[in-house]
Length: 76
Image (spheres, one colour):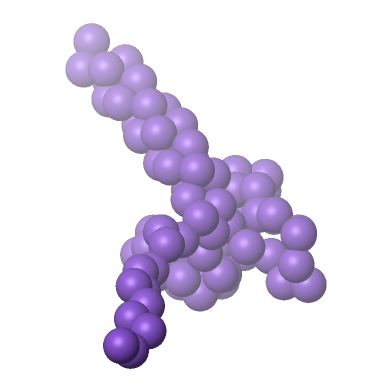
């Protein structure tokens, strides 16, 4: 009987700089600017920065909340 292995792909917990930029639909240079401004915080666990999925989600939540607040203020 042959040994059968079940292969599965675990979900990614973090993205590289280019993957994170692609996920946000921005250029890597824009991602670098957001990081430099402190709006995104990469992990330095490796030689190169990686962006956790949770960090990208936090960034989207916070920036979306800011835009919604500005729109509400403008409508009054």
